[in-house]
Image 1 (tube, helix red, strand yellow):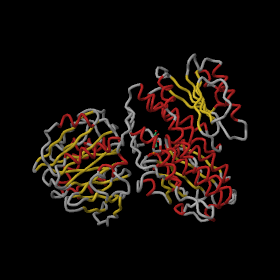
Image 2: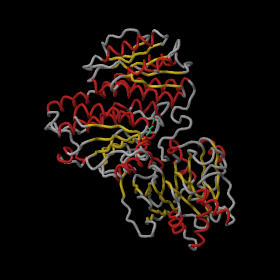
Image 3: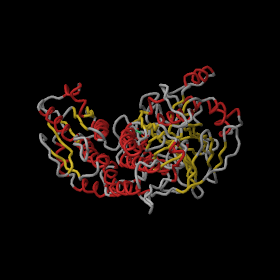
Image 4: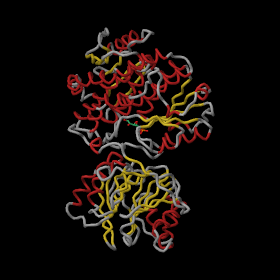
Length: 612
Ligand code: F6R
C-alpha cells in the first residue's frame, strides 16, 4: 500500500530513487512521484499511473541532486490523479512529504491549517502533514526532526512519513506508526524505504525502525529517537537474500517465476525440521510441553490467500493434534466479542507481515491474553515483531501481487505446527510423524512434475477466455483450494469466479450453472469417507445442467463426466492442497495473459494492504 524511498549520498539521487520505486511498485501503482533537493529549492515531478509515466515525464530533465524522496501510490484519500500523487509540498514549495497509510484526523487538521491561511492543492490526507510540518519546523528553528516528533503526536492513524526541506537538502526525516520503514546503511550514503528491496542493489546492511520512532539520515549517518527525542540505539541486521531474487530471471512475469519457484520454496520451508529422533524441530515457537498441553483452542487469523491457508490449518491440526481450531477473517475478528484468553493460541498468517487487518486482530487477541504465533514470509516485519513467536516461511521475496509460493509455504508451516503439537500432546508417535514428514519431503518433486506438464493446461485455459463466470468445487481440504482458485481468477483475470464446497451446490449455487459454464472440480483423494464419489455425483449434477467440467484428479483416479482431466501426483489427503493449487494458479495466470491483463500488477490491488 504505497512504496516509499529516500536517498542521501553522493550519487545523483534520481537513479536510486527510480530504481527503488521500481522494486516497490508492487505496493501500489496508481501514481508515482519524486522530490529532489537541489540547494535552496525542491524539484518535484509526479504523474498518475504507473512508474513509467513518471519516467517519461522526467526524460533527461531531472536536475543533479544528492538527496530526495520517491513514492509509488495505492490511492486511498483522493483519486489517482497527478495532483493527488505524492510528494505533497507546503505553500512555499520548500518542504515535501511522502506517506504510506492513512491520517485519520486529517479533516480536522486541514480545517485548522486552512484557518491559519494554508492553501491545499490536493484531496489527500497527506497534504495536511506537509502544511503542519512546515509550521512546526519554523517553530523549532528549522529542525525538521523536532518538527516531525511534534507533528506525529497530533496524528491519528497508521503511517510512514518521509520529509525533506530545501534549506537542509542532505537531511531526510522519517517516522513510522503501524506501517513499515527500514533504513539502509551504505558507505557514505543512506537510504530509507518501505522494503529492503528498494536498496538491496546498494547495501545489505539494514536497520528496522520501531513503532513511533523518528529517523534522520544524511550521507554521514543516521540517528533515531523516540517521540520525546530520546536517542534509540539502532539494531543492525544483514539482508540475507540477493537482488536477483527480486528480478524476473528470464520469466515473462514475476508470478510465473514464483509459481516455478514453489518446489524450492516448499523444500526450503521444510529444511531441517525433522530431528534424528523423529521430532519436529520448532524451537522458535517458544512453547514448552506444559504450554502446549494448556492450549484449549487455536484461533487462526488471516486475510485473503493466507486465510485459505488458515482453513487448511483447521483440517490438519484438528486431525493430528485433536485441538479445536477456529479460522477467522482478521478483518472481522475484533468487531465481535471473540472468546480468546490465555489458553488460546492465536496463529496469525501473513506473507508480508504488514497486513493491517491481521495486525489489528492480533493486537486485539493479545490484549485478551492470548499467545500469538506468527507465520510470516518477511523478516522483521510488524506482525512477527508484535507476536510472541514466529515461524518464518522460506518462500523468498514474493513480488507478484497475487500470492502463490507464499501460500504453499504457509500451508507447509501449518502442517509443521500441527505435527509438532500432535507429537507433543502424544497423539502421533515419532514413527507416524516421520512418515508424514517424509511424504511432505516428496511434495517438491511432485510440484515439479505438475509444472513440467502444464502446457496442455495453458492451451485449455485459452479456450475458456470468453467465459464470463467460472465455478470451483472442492470438498474437505479441496474446499479452501477451490476458494483459492476462484480468488486467483478474480484478481488476475477480472472474471466472476466462486469457490463452493461440493455439498453446498444443491443449496443454491447450482442455479448459476448455464449451458457452457466452466466448472473446475477438485476430486478429493486418499480420503476415508468416500468423498471422491460424492464429488463425482456433483460433477454429474452440474454436467446435466450444461456445465463444461474440468477435473483436477490424482493419477489413476477414476473420473466420469469430465470434459478435461488435469492429472496431479497422489499424496495423503491432507497434503492435496499443495498439489491441487498449482494447476489453478496456472489457470488464473494463463487466463490473465490471454485476456491481456497486467499479471503482476492487477488493477485496483496492492501487494501489502496496510490500511483497514
Ligand atoms: C491474493 C493475495 C491476498 C493476500 C492478503 C493477505 O493473491 O495475495 O489475498 O493473501 O492480502 O496478505 P498477507 O499474507 O501479506 O497478510
